[in-house]
Length: 264
Image (cartoon, rainbow, N blue to C red; front, side, top):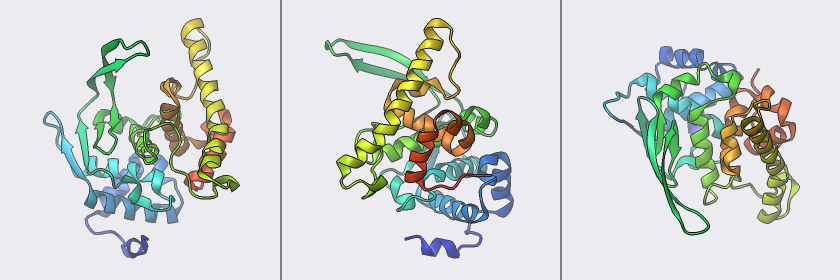
């Protein structure tokens, strides 16, 4: 599907100095195998041609900003069949200078409406744009040890949403893990993901309520299977070894889906 991209050496519009600076700043990208880097560069160039960046509150979209986001956004689809087609349900990427306050309205099981404010570093809308805080995108260059990456988090949500509402299970290919149907594939997926989610949730509760040891994986993932999937994807792509130390089965599951060889 992307044979023509492999002919772009280097892709037009992607200056080598800028590309090398991006790899140097986000070392989890630069440490990938040479073949991955070639494909990553081609996909990032195509992503930049197909998406529209908008700065909020006077924030200026520079080449550095756009390429940093593009290079990290395409990492999860690097080996996925279809490549950038996973992101074809939206065009816009809105970049704020820092975190923003989002006004939320929810209705509980009793029908009571609750309104509250939430500070967010990013947000992915179903069939809509992706919002990112540049402050947090930039922080991804130094938060590898914590497994934190806001770009991968939000684009993992986009991948999850391809099967409908985000629920922690992306669309799975036929025969995934040797299953015979989509229903069996989902069951196999959650047979691994759900226990890992419950383990993080329990550890987060113990840490918050009883002063127990805080989990290494971002406790934000304890909110729901969808958030757990996104948080785990962050760690998988930027600090695989640390994620594997806590959730070896989950890393095996992600390997089967993303088909991504580990970075050095």
